[in-house]
Every structure is written in C-alpha cells, then in structure tokens.
Image (cartoon, rainbow, N blue to C red):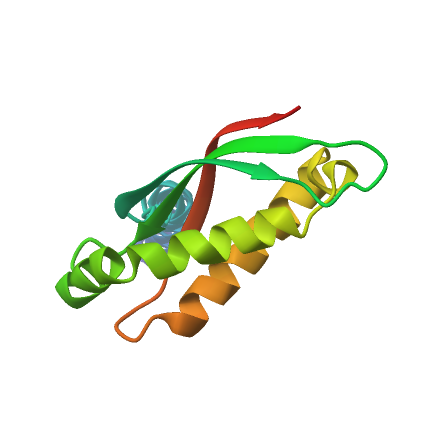
Length: 155
C-alpha cells in the first residue's frame, strides 16, 4: 500500500510539473506573438502625410522691365503666375478685378531690383516672398499661397 501512495505521489508530481511546463510554453508563445504583432502593427499604422492639393493658377503674363542697374542698361523678362485656393470664389473674382493693380505692383518691384539681386536663387526667392506679401496686403478675400517665375531672363 505504501508503494501505491508513493507511485500516486510521484504521478501527481509529474502531472503538476507537466502542467506548469505546458503553461510556461503557452505563456512564452503568447508573449512572442504579442511582440511580433506589435512590430507588424507599427509598420502598418505608419502615418501617410497627405500633400495639399495644388491651387488655382492665375497667369499674370509676361513682364519686360528695366532694372535699377545704373552702370549699364539692363532689363528682365519674367512670366509670373500666382497660386491660390481653388475653393475661394471671392478671391477668384478679386484677382480678375485687381489684375491691373497687381501688374503695376509687379512692374514696380522688378524695376527696383538690380540684375545682381535677381541672378541668384536666394534673390529670386526673396523677390517671390516680397511679391507674395505685397499682393496679400491688398487682397480682401484670401491670400496668394505661392508665386511662380515660369520664365526668367536678364539681359
């Protein structure tokens, strides 16, 4: 009878150790799955940055203007286009109404520049930003978002 109790006790110990080992393996498996799932989920949930849609382009035309250089007579030929929101109908109408005012502003700003200022990319960018700022100051119903110099030549 003592042998039967010893074998039952041994059987119980083996069963308990097997159960603990099985639970350990299941826990390890769940932990590994959790790590794997979090890594793949992080890759899938990358935020895709949506780029803004291009706006409406208003062609101001081509400008041929004398530059402010004193030592030699120089001029510039530039085609300028302005970008603004497509959905702003009031600004669309205002651009047409203020076309002569904006063209005069462009002529004046170009006429005040020297060839050396407009020859560099920094000088062109400075001109674009100043033009955008000055135009936006006279507009009531919106703002210009970008200025494009689609043709640009200094003679």
